[in-house]
Each structure stands twice: as C-alpha cells, then as structure tokens.
Length: 468
Image (tube, rainbow, N blue to C red):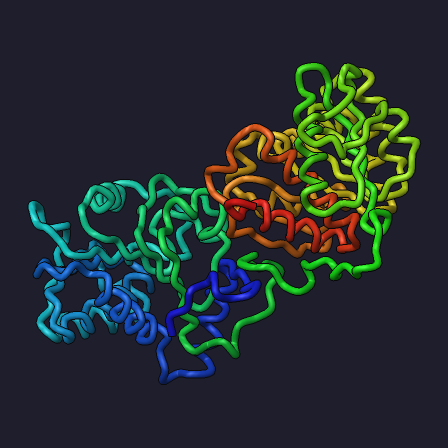
C-alpha cells in the first residue's frame, strides 16, 4: 500500500544494512512470496498514474541488482496493463541475483526486448530508474553516468525505485552523479539519505510501500521527524498563571557589529512563549530593543551571575579574550546551556573548554551548521556533509550533548545514539539570523518545561514551518 511519509508519525529510518537484513529474513520466512514481486507491482501501480497519456512508451532502466529486478517486474506488469514499454539494461543476466534473474527471464519469455543502450531520438512518457538501489558502493561512472545525464535531461517524469540512482541511501551524498527524480518510491521503510544532504534535491515527491513486511521491521535508532508528537508539546497554560512559570532565558552575544544576532535569539524566545528574556550584549551601546521592548538588558557578566533557566551563548559573540572568558564562565552555570555560533568556534580551539563542556551535569545543546561542526570534529565541511548523521552522533557522544546539525534535513542527535532527521523547512531558511532564531525557540521550549531532547526536536520542526 502506497503511503505518504508525511502522514506518518516518527516513522523509523533504515540503513542499507537494515534493508538487506530484512530482505534476507523475509526470504527465509516466506520462500514462496517474493518481495520483488510486490515491489514491482507497487511500482507499476504508481507508474501507471504518472506516465504521460500521450502514447509515448515508458522507459525502464534496469541495473545489475535487485533494484533492476524490481524495474523488470514493473515493466512486465505495465505492458500487461496496455502500456508500451522500452527496457534498457547493460546487466549480464548470468550474474543477476536469483529473483532479478527470474524477472529478466519472465520479461523475455513474454517477448520483451532488452536494449543495451537508451534508444536515441525517442520520446518517453515516463522513466523508471531501476539502475542502482540502496546497495550502491561506488561512484556512478561510465555508461551509467551517461544514462543518468540523459534521463535528467528528458522532458518527462522520472520515477526512482528505492533511492535515486547515485544517491547514497545512508547519508544522502551523491556518488559521482545522481538521478534527479520527480518521484521516488521507496520500499520497506524510509532511508536517511532520502531526507538529508543532497537527498531532498534528488528525491522529488516521496512515496513509501512497506510491501506487507511491517511485522518484520526491526527497531532502529533513527526516526524521520514528519510531525510533532505529544511529547513535543508544552503543558497547557492555566488561566491563573504568571510569567515566572514559563522560564527566564539569558542570551549572551552581540559584539560590535553583530548585535542583531542576540536580539533575534531573544525575540524568538519571547515569541515561542518564554516568560522573560534578558540579553547580555558585548556591545554596551545597546540600551533598548525598540522592536521588542520586552527584552531586558544586562551586561554579559551580570547575566551569567544571575539566575536563569536556560542560557544561550554564542549569537554574535565573537572570539575575543572577553568572549572566551564569558564562555568559560557559562560552562559552570547550573542550568541548561545552549551553545551556538562563536561559542562553538571557541570550543573548537580550546581543549580545556571542550572537556569542561563534556563534563557538565546539566543539559547542553549544540546547534552547529556544517562549518562549525567541522571545526568541532577537526574535519572539513565536505566530510560533515558526506555523512551528516554520523557527524551529529559523534558530536553528541563527544560532548554528551544534544545536537542539531543544521542544514537540509537537520539531524537532531542524542548521546545515546538515537537521532531524528527533520523533514520541515526549505531553502528560505538559508539566510543570516536563521540559526539565532532556532536557538531562541529551543531555549524557550526548554524553559517552559520540555525535556531538552524533545524541545530541540520540536524547535527544529517548528523552525521549518513557513509563516511560524
């Protein structure tokens, strides 16, 4: 049954290794019921709704693995439904996996031809990408790369099976080149790579079919954050309440020329329901925020010494000696601490601060973008983007912190190895101040009583909602 992943609440994420294990377990338990037959049938059903009704054939690209077998089953079923179908494959049928080999034989037994290349000069009503599935281990090169370029240039819908060919199912990195699909039908469960890094740019509209194997799906450490659960909601406010019940937040940052960063964080915290917010700007020329006069002001040193439920440090902080001293003092604060922007950059260059951050008994939240994450881990930004889930989990473990690795498919990681990939948001968030706003939102939810992990997930999801 086809599902819209956005309609599911916290659906689990499955790695390529998980999918192989599920496939193997299914084969042992159901020797007479092929998952490939089910996947091919699901593909044909969806493809029949996507193909342009102009009499042009459906082009099916079948690779050398089970993904190609799924495509061949779909090709056969589409032809039985009256569609003209052209199959192209450079696979050697002798070396196909057993189920895929049977699909190849069945296609040929019905009189189906297999072209060794995409027929030139032809127009197609739909392309089904069955070149490579979740098991891709190498860059797409040579003839497959040429095919990817050719179908990406075609003026017709593209339906990718499981993952767009060339996209790493585990991390969303492009291996050489990748299909830019209009639709992706993924099987058994969602894969992390569909939701983060380059995945969203290549997946198009995402569809899920569990193929009737729901009972065999194992527990996994990752979920897709598709909508908020009850655990993400603050308690309803009583009528008889006051601001002191909803937390006091401090925001430290705002060096000369960067005052806006801490103001954005403070305003966002108020907008998200914090009882009160005090800004400690390093630029002492700031005496009032005329856009949000509810923000209170103090010197950063006074703010650190004061009582607060959550302290944000980093937006517009700079990396001066004074900034370093403020961060060192903030690490000793007893409440929840959220580190962003220059606070993260200062951590990255001071091992003593790193060790102190990891030893904090109170909750610590880190909200790095890929560049900041790279500095914290001593790698390049490219390394971070190559495996965003792994990078977020490494940071969470190293700092014993809750981490939101920002970017396409923000990854929220916990020290215990669990993680969530956010599905809200879009390119409109790629602008200065966006991260400052996220910091304020997360702090406000913690200050109102949410656990830090749930608060960070909720803030990330809400941050991605247009108009909120």
